[in-house]
Image 1 (cartoon, rainbow, N blue to C red):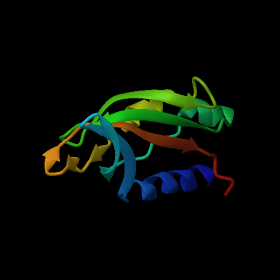
Image 2 (cartoon, rainbow, N blue to C red; image 1 turned 180 degrees about the vertical axis):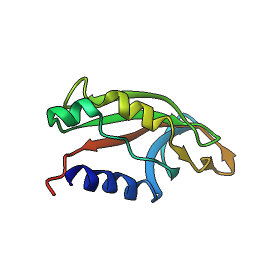
Image 3 (cartoon, rainbow, N blue to C red; image 1 turned 90 degrees about the vertical axis):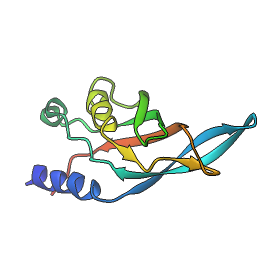
Amino acid sequence: MKYISLFLVFLSTALFSATDRGTIVVDGETVEVLVERVYSPQATYPRSALRRGVEGFVVVEFAVSPEGEVIDPYVVETDSPGSFERTAMRTIRRWAYEPPVYNGVAVTVDDVKARFTFRLSTD
């Protein structure tokens, strides 16, 4: 039963949009901007971590292209090396954003971060 409730948590959160923060450089000055996620399926729990009962998190940093695509993702932090990075990277590459625009110009937004948390349900 705990695996079914875990799946339902992942599924339900994939249906909502979210806003993330990133930066652009304008006239030599770094400006924080918001980017709106329009598609963000959640990562699936890796079977090997599930079998071992491992929980953890992964933080991925990336840029959002002027078309709203995730570009150049890389892992910046994890508390369980080797357990969740691959699924987080596979998932983040599928995300899509509203194309970012600043002052009417399409821009690439850098330094966007997403945190994936993997917790086993106790239900």
